[in-house]
Image 1 (cartoon, one colour):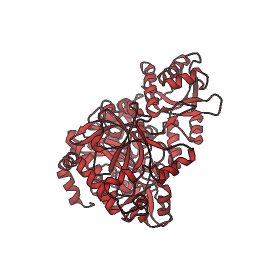
Image 2 (cartoon, rainbow, N blue to C red; image 1 turned 60 degrees about the horizontal axis):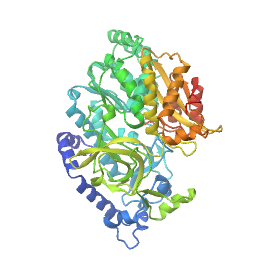
Image 3 (cartoon, one colour; image 1 turned 90 degrees about the vertical axis):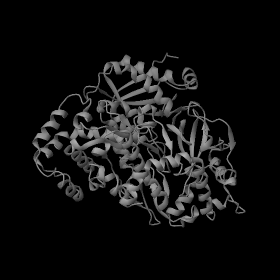
Image 4 (spheres, rainbow, N blue to C red; image 1 turned 30 degrees about the vertical axis):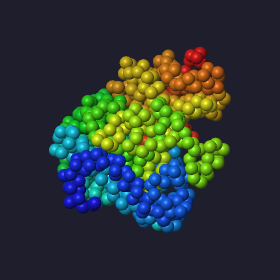
Length: 601
């Protein structure tokens, strides 16, 4: 699948491939499950649940338990430490994919085979095909994508562990395919020094500004960070363009060599133009000004990334935001077949050949439980012993039986040894494309604020903050990003919000009017559910606290997580902080603190 011929075939027949996949979704799912079970019948893991060898798909749901990462971690650890991969699956493992761990927990190691990795690499080509079909002009220029990698880690088995994007950017299918349409040279993407990489990629994007028809990154947080970097370095970038010489601090040999074929001569007129644009006090519409031919901004803006939508719309100046796909380290879920949908209306279409999907119904607000049954199998029992509770989940349905308007948590069975694995993502079914479900990403399961009996989810918090920031918008104040944590160091405990604010016309810190900020606190609390309000009224929860931080504080938070192993390319800002170190970083940037009125309930 790495050759140019195969890539051309996907582009030539891509829409036909999508039609066939979605029209035969149920049949493809059944074939995939049967193939997985036949191929892996002799593995240690599956043998536990098919004592007499009856590993038919009819017995799969009855015998094999639904599990979390903690349930299968001992098996994965054994493989990472040198035992045979036949513990989990028949095919030899080629690498581990690391999750970043920033959106809802600790990093994970996900096994990957050559076949499963190759199958996932087709998705970016299909996404690119759909975008070029739906957005006129994307095939007439280059894409200015900001991509980054992290160092690989060798496990005791000798197998390498890396982020999926790091592995993908090193493949021939990327180099022979999408990379040919990108402004950034491969060597600048593969540079392990993120600062040097970002500088060189921005410099290349500016030098080729008239050719750029698409700008983007994997996640919206990365693009927001890149614009902040541009704010800090545009003068130096202009100097490089004006003189034709690359800054001395770019020391990576591969980067310098790559840039030598792009930064070939002084371009003072281009430098003057960029300087004139960047000197404007307001950066509203800066992307459109710097890259006038851009047709869209491509970056995932759903889920926790939705908080960046107003900021990217501000910088984009009317350029459409496209959220191209949805997935996780464990599996690819789907792609956006209507890329020009408004960000909050985006639905993704399930690709039925990526994994065998099951769906656990959850309540209509995206959280909680509905119909329940006890998990079967030793693994389920073992996972519940630490809490002394019976482990229960909702009865799952398959892809063909999901209902429009219902909420589900995703469960996947993959080609690489995950069997009935709870990914932790909650989706809302919005319709069908042919026979394949379409869904909106809602939230990460179990990402909650809680002091007592209250359970405030990522969605609850997002809705509350969306209401509160309406108070700020008429004043020209933008909420650029936020996070939160449950402070139980005092009694009673309280919710603490961190907001980074800026004026629309500049990066200046707004004048913080105490009454306005307290009103925001009150609106957030009023938006929470009955349980929260009851506990607040009864004194079990103290008044919500809002801590405003200075511009750039959340960039320092990203730097912290990157230093701990997260990738800039896959960084997801934590909605609810679990790390004391992360809280300390935000506290150091605090410029004001406000409390909800104590008499509001």
